[in-house]
Image (cartoon, rainbow, N blue to C red; front, side, top):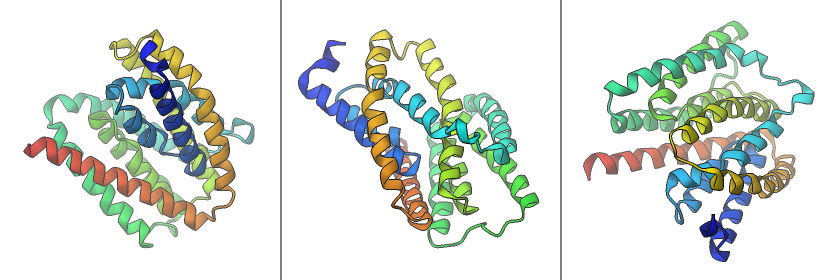
Length: 253
């Protein structure tokens, strides 16, 4: 616990979570992607992830905005298919190469996200076909998630592709992350990757995360739906390339 409270470390951790909160508030995703690498300069990646436990759970809970209705029943079949795929993917991981899987995922993310970025999308998809496509995407994402923990990018790309309104996008992704993060962090704690010191610090980091999220939400009101979607796609492209480069290095070095 004391290493977290060293002045330099404390300032860096709070700043990282605050910046992650701004990104999360602005576009609905990206808190861990921005915060964890910064904190990981000071501590092991698993520690960095554990410090994001309560900030991730609380910020996603707030963005679900339950008083408006969860707003995601339209995508309930996709979420059910996602959880089924996660179970199956978790079984397959024992027989497949993590690096090869991650490289394949990153190429898929880069390809489909780039198509969306340049205007090739599914916004005219009929409702019936949308439901079928969403079930396929959910199941496919679940398989990938069970193998690598990277389940969100294909779903986010799909949501952008069908051109849903940004506030519905925020509530839908928040619901997905909220319900997925609880078993994720529970599993990490169960396997000894975090202790009560991490959880106490994580609880304290909820405040800068929520404050950053509040500022990010103010920024989001200034963004048109088109600019909002372009920002999401840029973040996904960054995720895709970082995943590709990291696993190519692991594979060949």
